[in-house]
Amino acid sequence: MRCRSCGYEGPPRPEVLERLRIAQGELSRLDQRTRQLDASAQAAIVRALRTRWGAIVVLSLGVLPFVALAVAGVAEGFEEHPGLPLANRIIGVSLTWVPLLVYACVGGILAAFVGRARRRLLAASAAIPPERPGEPVTCAVCGASLASFGTSPIARCGYCAADNVVHPAALRQAATARSFDIDSIGATTALRAREVVSAASHASAMGVASVVGTPPVSFFAVLALLLFAKAVEPYIALAASPTPRYAWVATKRGKCVGLIGERDGVPQAHFGGNDKLPNPMTLDTLPPRFAPSAIVGRTMRLANGKRGRVVGVTGAPVTNREQLVLDSGAHGDLPGACAEE
Image (cartoon, one colour):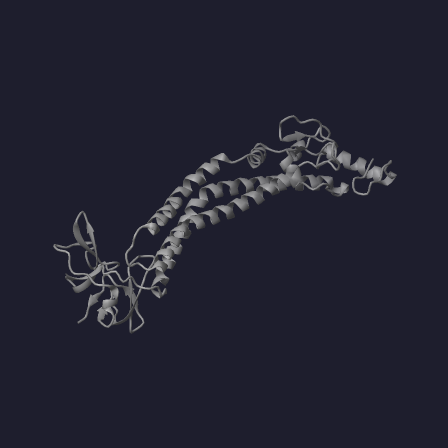
C-alpha cells in the first residue's frame, strides 16, 4: 500500500491489516443503496453541473419592468423642465434606478446561496481527485480507483458500488484527501449518504427560491423603499421650483391650491394626496398661476387637517410636488392645501 498523506509505501503492519479486513467485512455487509445516489440526488447533481437557462430566462423577464423604469427615468431627466432645480432632477432620476439595483442585489444574494448549496452538494458527493496529474480519481468511500466513466458525471465504484461524482467542477470542490476511522466505516458511510441527501434537498430548494423569490422579494423591497422615501420626503430640504404651476381653485372645502395641468387641451387641477377633493378637477378656464414661494406667510390647512402659517416650501423629488412647512413643524403637500384666511 502507499499512503498519499505521508508517502509510506509497503505492506501494512499486521494490526492495521486486521483492521482493514474487519472494515472490508463491514462494508460488504452494508446495503449498497446507502452508498448510491437516489434519483432525486442525481437530478440535483445534474442541475448543479449545468447552466440554468430556465432560471436565466425567468430572471431576465422579471428584470424588464425595472429596466423600463430606469430607462424612463433617464429619458425624463433629459427632457426640458423649465425652472426645475438641477438637484431635484438628479435625485428624481436616481430614484428610478433604485428598483433595478434592488433587483440585482436580491438576485445576487439568492444566487450566492444557490451557489453555496450546490458547492456543498458537489463536495459531499465528489470522488477524491488525483494527487498527481495522470493518476485516476478514487472512490470517496473505499479509496479504490474508478474506472473510465465516459461522459456521465457520476461513476459507480467497481469495488464497493458507491456512487461518486467525477465531473471536474465537483472534483474542484472535493478535498484532495479524505480520512475516516476504518473501525466505524458503516457510520461514516451512512453519514455521507445523509449529507448528500441533505445537500441535494437544500440545493433544489434554493434553486427554486432564487427563481420564484427574486421578482416578488424585489417588488416588496422596492415598495418598502418607496414608502420610506415618501415618509422622509417632507424632511428633505430641496429647493422648490420657481415655475408658476399652482393656482387657487374654488372647491367645496374653500379656496384650495391646485397643481395645474392640461389634458387634451382641457385645464385640470390636481390636489395631491387630498382625497376629500376631486382628483383631478376639470376647470372651465385656465386660472392665473403662481410659484410655490407665493404661499409663504399665509395661513393654510393641510390635507391631514393640520393648520398653521407657512414658513417654508421645499421641493419633493418623489412626488414632484412641493411640500409646505408650517410654523408648527407640520409638513404636507402644497397641492390640496386650503386657505384659512
